[in-house]
Image (tube, rainbow, N blue to C red; front, side, top):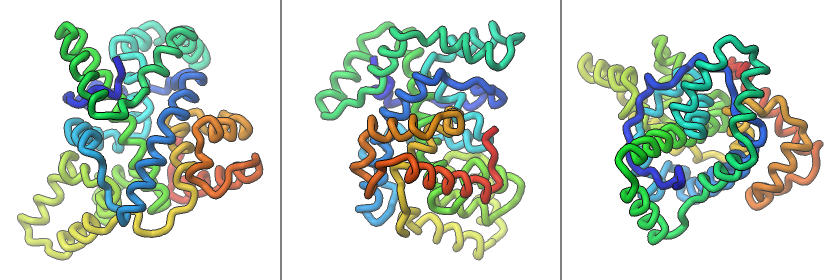
Length: 315
């Protein structure tokens, strides 16, 4: 049963432990990056061709709307990694892991998690990320899900919901870095502290913030109630302004960086390893060239400078 097959589910932000410092094992994280990076690159390519507006296929759009409260992950970037991890090993596995490792060191926790995700589990994980390509395949997946006992359905739906939350959160978080030079996980906390400019920039990137984040909903309602026309006009402009209107360099590569960043492996991989990931994910299809370590190192330094300029620190 593939996590991609989940097309409905309630997203409970309270189920996420924002303070978790555990990251997925290296091999699992690299498989994730290889599987997901081309999907993000294809989506960005479609967006650029359509004038930069966020338009997804009906399947992806339905998933996104059903779990729209994923936008609350932006309140704390560590939640993105936790959502991915719970999507990979399930909430029960995550809770059991936390209980069993409460007194272990950070390194011991990572080793235990790596032991949990052995080679066989890694192969199963790779199968989870196989995306149906035709409508018949989607319908067959939905039929297979419906045939499961209700208890198993509920577990898969919740796990898929968390995984998709990590997918969409990372996509738009990295997109914000490319457009504004600052991530949503920096902009949203600033907005929560009363920074309207940060709120407007965030809303331009992920419009689900305006429809699903309690603070953004309340701020818009407040502006309407108080007749704050200047703010409302600025918000309308941001909502109508395509986030990818300008030319963004290296979008696919930056998306790969964002995925590795969200699972907390980006800065611990050798640059040769990242270059191998680019080859495995086929990212040369989306870039002019990614053919040597020096080229990749320059892009990685640029990505890191953007992070620092946004006042963001992952660790």
